[in-house]
Length: 79
Image (spheres, rainbow, N blue to C red):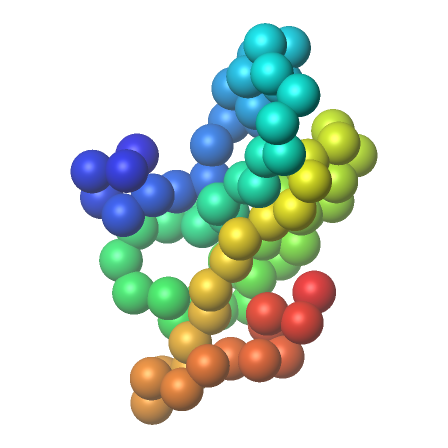
């Protein structure tokens, strides 16, 4: 979904790509398009996706989260 700024790819896509390369892969995790202020529901989805990708062997994840005032939501990004 790069045309809308990117959203979390399906885990099946990651697994298929991993079959064909051994280069490091970092998954861009984003529960929806739009701004980066995530409520508790969306944050929990991010946490579940992080765990799922970790278990699948991803080399890292890329996330971003903001507070309503536009500052970095460091608490959410410390995961």
